[in-house]
Length: 163
Image 1: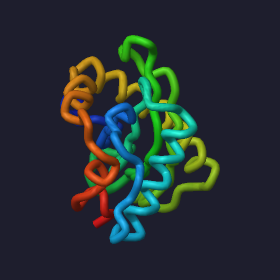
Image 2: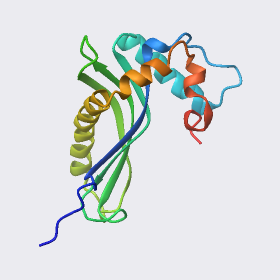
Image 3: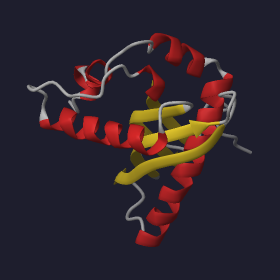
Image 4: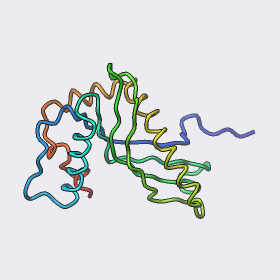
């Protein structure tokens, strides 16, 4: 009998988290790249739609489903960006509003209906992973590190510029 390694996860999720309450400004520098302008527009729309309290913007985010015991074969990679909202005590994710897209797969072709179903599952997986993020204390650390930053500061740098 063969068993998979205990540390090998079937779902790999990673994201950068920006607490919207930490934003001091929402304007974009005049010399910003087009990618930075687009992300800033999405960030501003999220701020207007969901507010700043208990709202977190996830970006530079991925979700990879592994369907085989391989890092290369049998996987679907999704990218997502958007908002998660927490309960009044910042203890649990209560809503996810992320845009998800399939960026690659090594399954030999993923039927459209399966890809659509997996994109819906990404929404659920993000909520579960965000709860784990909270439980690990990373949300508090993210909020503390984000005190009085600007949108340009949050989105600048190699990750924010889409390079």
